[in-house]
Length: 119
Image 1 (cartoon, rainbow, N blue to C red):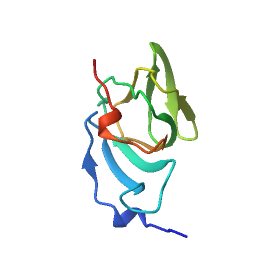
Image 2 (cartoon, helix red, strand yellow):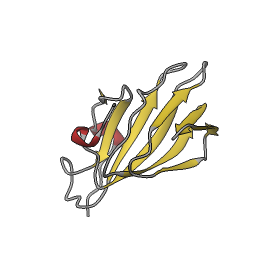
Image 3 (cartoon, helix red, strand yellow):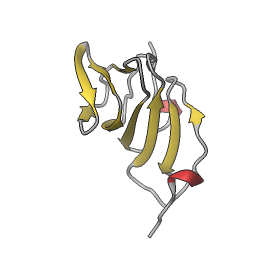
Image 4 (cartoon, helix red, strand yellow):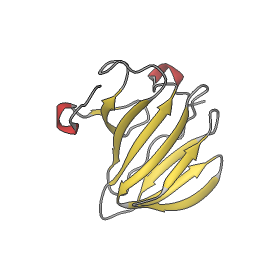
């Protein structure tokens, strides 16, 4: 069993521009098929539109309000919403002004910068 405290993970900025705390991934646990991270987008900010060739992602919004664009379909998101992002789908998340948008990001296979494409 692996248990890791959120506070044990130092935040860093990913290639898409979000601030991430990696909770469980290949670098922190004996993970084989998925990764779990907490992501934050600052008020009024957005990630850079991108896709993952291999990874399927699920975002679960913990706090804040924003919008999610998946392959050109834009929907509002708020705490309690879960979003499926299929492999190959262009996506971008934007936080509304006022408060950060904080969400969990589960990737399968585990997240990798090498699987993040911008053009």
